[in-house]
Image 1 (cartoon, one colour):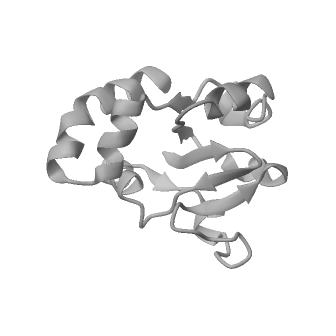
Image 2 (image 1 turned 180 degrees about the horizontal axis):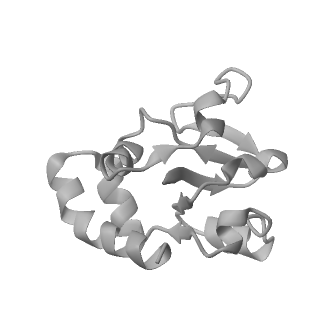
Length: 131
């Protein structure tokens, strides 16, 4: 099952690759990154420590079996209000998982303790999203 892990902050969207600690948890759960993420050119995509930057015009590259999104503050409301994910097949099918802040934080810290503290809740949310 392919995975896309993103942080949508308009006007750009951060897409995380295999080196991200949160993504590594999903890889350990058996997900794989989409070819689009694997093939993104870091220079052309304005890579930063927060992930690969993807413009709104390139959101079609976000399609995967499961899109996992995190947001802090008003980003989610902005994305939903502007229906930016509306044309992505995975989102249309309901395979868009907005992580609760507690789980996003647990994955971001990347320690064995923080990951194990959120793992059961994460697996339950994934199961519910892709059922």
